[in-house]
Amino acid sequence: MTHTAETGEATGTKDKDYNLIWYVEACLSNALRMETYIQDAERDKDTEVAELFRKAQADSRKGAELGKQLLKARFGS
Image (cartoon, rainbow, N blue to C red; front, side, top):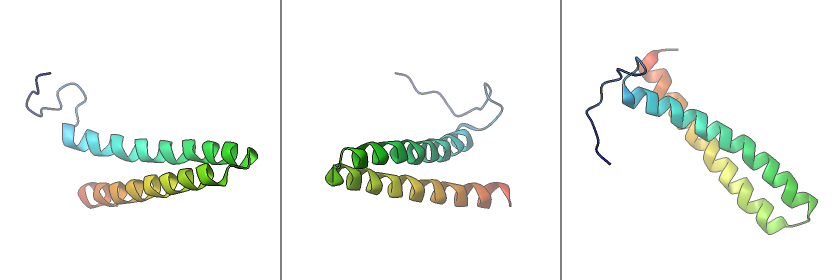
C-alpha cells in the first residue's frame, strides 16, 4: 500500500483532523457496542466476560474523552 501526502482534497478536511474525528466516533461507537455485549454476558451470568467488556468500554470512553479534548483545543469550544 502506498501512502500519499496529507492533502484533504477528497474530504475538504486535513487527513489528521479527519482521523481524529473518526477516532472519537469509533471510540464512542465501541462504548455503545460494549454495552450490548455486557448485557449479553450478564444475561448468561458470565461475570468474567462482562468484566472484560466493562474494561473495554471504559478504555473506549477514555479514548473518546481524550480525542474530544484534542478536538476542542484545535477547533475551539
